[in-house]
Image 1 (cartoon, each protein chain N blue to C red):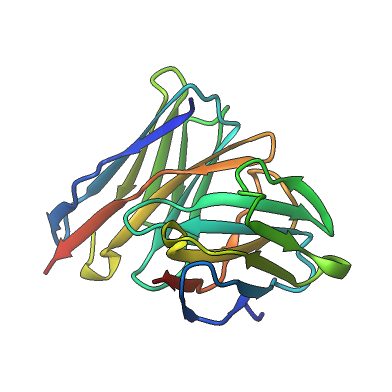
Image 2: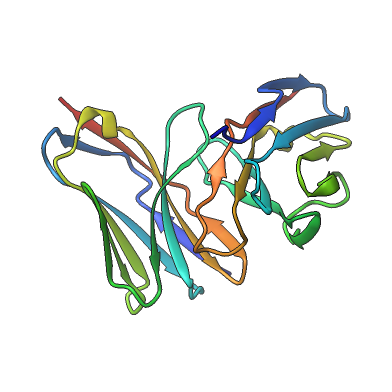
Length: 115
Length: 110
Protein backbone atom coordinates (compact mmCIF):
# COMPACT_ATOMS: atom_id res chain seq x y z
CA UNK A 1 0.00 0.00 0.00
CA UNK A 2 1.49 3.36 -1.01
CA UNK A 3 1.91 5.86 1.78
CA UNK A 4 1.10 9.55 1.97
CA UNK A 5 3.06 11.46 -0.65
CA UNK A 6 4.20 15.05 -0.24
CA UNK A 7 6.14 17.43 -2.42
CA UNK A 8 8.42 19.20 -2.44
CA UNK A 9 10.52 17.76 0.36
CA UNK A 10 12.42 21.00 0.88
CA UNK A 11 11.73 24.62 0.01
CA UNK A 12 13.67 27.80 0.68
CA UNK A 13 12.02 31.15 0.01
CA UNK A 14 12.43 34.79 0.92
CA UNK A 15 9.93 36.40 3.28
CA UNK A 16 6.88 37.86 1.55
CA UNK A 17 7.12 35.27 -1.23
CA UNK A 18 4.43 32.65 -1.72
CA UNK A 19 4.78 28.88 -1.59
CA UNK A 20 2.57 25.86 -2.15
CA UNK A 21 2.77 22.31 -0.86
CA UNK A 22 1.08 19.27 -2.30
CA UNK A 23 -0.21 16.13 -0.62
CA UNK A 24 -1.61 12.90 -1.99
CA UNK A 25 -3.20 10.80 0.78
CA UNK A 26 -3.54 7.05 0.95
CA UNK A 27 -6.16 5.86 -1.51
CA UNK A 28 -9.59 5.58 0.07
CA UNK A 29 -8.80 7.76 3.07
CA UNK A 30 -11.61 10.24 3.59
CA UNK A 31 -9.84 12.45 6.11
CA UNK A 32 -6.81 14.61 5.37
CA UNK A 33 -4.85 16.76 7.81
CA UNK A 34 -2.23 19.47 7.45
CA UNK A 35 0.07 20.05 10.41
CA UNK A 36 2.81 22.56 11.09
CA UNK A 37 5.73 21.28 13.16
CA UNK A 38 8.21 23.85 14.40
CA UNK A 39 11.58 22.50 15.51
CA UNK A 40 11.36 21.04 19.02
CA UNK A 41 7.56 21.12 19.10
CA UNK A 42 4.81 18.68 18.36
CA UNK A 43 2.69 18.88 15.21
CA UNK A 44 0.06 21.62 15.32
CA UNK A 45 -3.13 20.96 13.37
CA UNK A 46 -3.76 23.63 10.74
CA UNK A 47 -6.72 22.19 8.88
CA UNK A 48 -8.66 18.94 8.65
CA UNK A 49 -10.73 17.85 5.67
CA UNK A 50 -13.39 15.17 5.52
CA UNK A 51 -13.61 14.33 1.82
CA UNK A 52 -13.59 17.83 0.29
CA UNK A 53 -15.24 19.61 3.22
CA UNK A 54 -13.44 21.39 6.06
CA UNK A 55 -13.93 19.83 9.52
CA UNK A 56 -11.64 22.15 11.48
CA UNK A 57 -9.52 25.11 10.43
CA UNK A 58 -9.58 26.99 13.71
CA UNK A 59 -5.77 27.23 13.90
CA UNK A 60 -5.16 28.13 10.27
CA UNK A 61 -3.88 31.73 9.91
CA UNK A 62 -6.41 32.55 7.26
CA UNK A 63 -4.90 35.91 6.39
CA UNK A 64 -1.93 34.14 4.80
CA UNK A 65 -2.64 30.41 4.69
CA UNK A 66 -5.14 28.65 2.46
CA UNK A 67 -5.82 25.02 1.69
CA UNK A 68 -8.05 23.11 -0.63
CA UNK A 69 -8.88 19.51 -1.33
CA UNK A 70 -10.44 19.34 -4.72
CA UNK A 71 -12.43 16.22 -5.54
CA UNK A 72 -11.76 14.90 -2.04
CA UNK A 73 -8.42 13.37 -2.94
CA UNK A 74 -5.16 15.34 -3.05
CA UNK A 75 -4.69 18.66 -1.37
CA UNK A 76 -2.60 21.82 -1.56
CA UNK A 77 -1.58 24.17 1.22
CA UNK A 78 -0.49 27.68 0.28
CA UNK A 79 1.24 30.44 2.20
CA UNK A 80 1.06 33.96 0.80
CA UNK A 81 2.97 36.00 1.86
CA UNK A 82 5.40 33.96 3.96
CA UNK A 83 6.88 35.24 7.22
CA UNK A 84 10.05 34.19 9.00
CA UNK A 85 8.02 32.41 11.68
CA UNK A 86 6.51 30.12 9.04
CA UNK A 87 9.79 28.21 8.89
CA UNK A 88 8.77 24.70 9.90
CA UNK A 89 8.03 21.23 8.60
CA UNK A 90 4.58 20.92 7.05
CA UNK A 91 3.17 17.47 7.53
CA UNK A 92 0.25 15.95 5.69
CA UNK A 93 -1.59 12.99 7.18
CA UNK A 94 -4.61 10.94 6.22
CA UNK A 95 -6.93 8.53 7.98
CA UNK A 96 -9.70 6.25 6.85
CA UNK A 97 -12.29 8.30 8.71
CA UNK A 98 -12.31 11.28 11.06
CA UNK A 99 -12.15 10.76 14.79
CA UNK A 100 -9.56 9.77 17.36
CA UNK A 101 -10.14 6.05 16.96
CA UNK A 102 -8.58 6.23 13.50
CA UNK A 103 -4.82 6.15 13.23
CA UNK A 104 -3.27 8.87 11.16
CA UNK A 105 -0.73 8.04 8.47
CA UNK A 106 1.82 10.79 7.95
CA UNK A 107 3.82 11.77 4.92
CA UNK A 108 7.53 12.66 5.11
CA UNK A 109 6.80 16.37 5.37
CA UNK A 110 8.00 19.48 3.55
CA UNK A 111 10.72 21.45 5.31
CA UNK A 112 10.18 25.16 4.66
CA UNK A 113 12.86 27.73 5.36
CA UNK A 114 11.89 31.39 5.11
CA UNK A 115 14.84 33.78 4.85
CA UNK B 1 -6.30 26.62 27.60
CA UNK B 2 -5.61 23.00 26.75
CA UNK B 3 -2.10 21.88 27.55
CA UNK B 4 -0.13 18.68 27.05
CA UNK B 5 3.14 18.07 28.86
CA UNK B 6 5.69 15.44 27.98
CA UNK B 7 9.13 15.07 29.53
CA UNK B 8 11.07 17.90 27.93
CA UNK B 9 14.39 16.33 28.80
CA UNK B 10 15.66 13.37 26.84
CA UNK B 11 15.40 9.96 28.46
CA UNK B 12 18.57 7.88 28.40
CA UNK B 13 18.36 4.22 29.30
CA UNK B 14 20.40 1.06 28.93
CA UNK B 15 19.46 -1.61 26.44
CA UNK B 16 17.20 -4.25 27.95
CA UNK B 17 15.64 -1.90 30.49
CA UNK B 18 12.08 -0.60 30.45
CA UNK B 19 11.55 2.93 29.18
CA UNK B 20 8.64 4.86 30.69
CA UNK B 21 7.42 8.06 29.06
CA UNK B 22 4.82 10.38 30.53
CA UNK B 23 2.05 12.43 28.96
CA UNK B 24 0.14 14.80 31.25
CA UNK B 25 -2.68 17.05 30.15
CA UNK B 26 -4.80 19.84 31.61
CA UNK B 27 -8.06 21.53 30.68
CA UNK B 28 -8.99 18.68 28.39
CA UNK B 29 -11.03 15.50 28.46
CA UNK B 30 -9.82 13.40 25.56
CA UNK B 31 -11.94 10.59 24.23
CA UNK B 32 -8.87 8.98 22.69
CA UNK B 33 -5.16 9.10 23.33
CA UNK B 34 -2.65 7.98 20.75
CA UNK B 35 1.11 7.45 20.85
CA UNK B 36 3.33 8.03 17.83
CA UNK B 37 7.00 7.52 17.12
CA UNK B 38 8.94 10.10 15.10
CA UNK B 39 12.42 9.62 13.70
CA UNK B 40 14.54 12.59 12.54
CA UNK B 41 13.43 13.90 9.16
CA UNK B 42 10.35 11.68 9.03
CA UNK B 43 6.67 11.98 9.80
CA UNK B 44 5.20 10.41 12.95
CA UNK B 45 4.24 6.74 12.88
CA UNK B 46 1.24 5.47 14.83
CA UNK B 47 1.96 3.01 17.64
CA UNK B 48 -1.00 2.60 19.98
CA UNK B 49 -4.47 3.98 20.68
CA UNK B 50 -6.31 3.90 24.01
CA UNK B 51 -9.87 5.04 24.69
CA UNK B 52 -11.06 7.04 27.70
CA UNK B 53 -12.87 4.02 29.13
CA UNK B 54 -9.77 1.80 28.88
CA UNK B 55 -7.10 1.57 31.55
CA UNK B 56 -4.37 -0.28 29.68
CA UNK B 57 -3.42 -1.45 26.19
CA UNK B 58 -0.57 -3.69 25.10
CA UNK B 59 1.09 -4.43 21.79
CA UNK B 60 4.18 -6.62 21.72
CA UNK B 61 6.79 -4.77 23.85
CA UNK B 62 4.63 -1.67 24.20
CA UNK B 63 2.17 -0.84 26.96
CA UNK B 64 0.03 2.26 27.41
CA UNK B 65 -1.94 3.23 30.50
CA UNK B 66 -4.57 5.96 30.68
CA UNK B 67 -5.68 7.51 33.97
CA UNK B 68 -8.42 10.08 33.35
CA UNK B 69 -8.48 11.01 37.06
CA UNK B 70 -4.78 11.90 37.12
CA UNK B 71 -5.04 13.19 33.52
CA UNK B 72 -2.02 11.15 32.62
CA UNK B 73 -0.88 8.47 30.21
CA UNK B 74 2.23 6.35 30.64
CA UNK B 75 3.95 4.68 27.70
CA UNK B 76 6.24 1.75 28.41
CA UNK B 77 8.73 0.00 26.15
CA UNK B 78 9.98 -3.20 27.73
CA UNK B 79 13.29 -4.88 26.81
CA UNK B 80 14.31 -1.68 25.05
CA UNK B 81 16.68 -1.80 22.07
CA UNK B 82 18.89 0.83 20.44
CA UNK B 83 16.43 0.76 17.51
CA UNK B 84 13.79 2.16 19.87
CA UNK B 85 15.72 5.44 20.01
CA UNK B 86 13.37 8.13 18.65
CA UNK B 87 11.01 10.88 19.73
CA UNK B 88 7.68 9.68 21.11
CA UNK B 89 4.62 11.91 20.80
CA UNK B 90 1.29 11.63 22.56
CA UNK B 91 -1.82 12.95 20.86
CA UNK B 92 -5.21 13.61 22.41
CA UNK B 93 -8.48 13.77 20.53
CA UNK B 94 -12.08 14.67 21.24
CA UNK B 95 -14.68 15.96 18.84
CA UNK B 96 -12.42 15.66 15.79
CA UNK B 97 -9.82 17.96 17.34
CA UNK B 98 -6.34 16.48 17.71
CA UNK B 99 -3.66 18.00 19.93
CA UNK B 100 -0.08 16.71 20.00
CA UNK B 101 2.45 17.00 22.77
CA UNK B 102 5.99 18.20 22.06
CA UNK B 103 7.37 14.68 22.44
CA UNK B 104 10.07 13.03 24.51
CA UNK B 105 13.39 12.02 22.99
CA UNK B 106 14.44 8.50 23.98
CA UNK B 107 18.00 7.23 23.67
CA UNK B 108 18.67 3.55 24.24
CA UNK B 109 22.32 2.77 24.77
CA UNK B 110 23.78 -0.59 23.78
